[in-house]
Amino acid sequence: MEEKDKIKKLEEELAKKENDLKIKELEEKIKSTDQKMQNDKAIKSNGYEGLYCSSDDKILLGFCGGLAHKFGVQTSIVRFIVFISGFFFVGWFYLAGLFLPKHPTK
Image 1 (cartoon, rainbow, N blue to C red):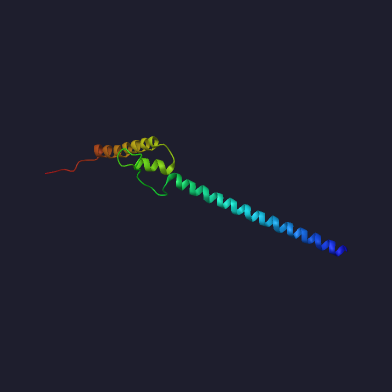
Image 2 (image 1 turned 30 degrees about the horizontal axis):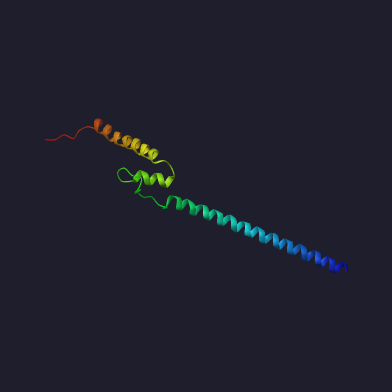
């Protein structure tokens, strides 16, 4: 009788461990599925994975609107940064033009 009781206990423990293992596997699958769903939601919220010109949030070409949608920031912030950086780079060309020597012509 004692051996049968030990066998039953061992079988119960084995069944419990198998159930625990199945539960852990299911929890891992749920976590990975949740992560995939969050990634899909991020892509769907932007509507597009890559860089694009926006057709609904544009002033000239929609480039700033596309950048804003891509990175999830306000369009006005992106426009301001593009505006300031444009002056910065164009300003360097004008400064270089003022201080570089002129090529002599005949």
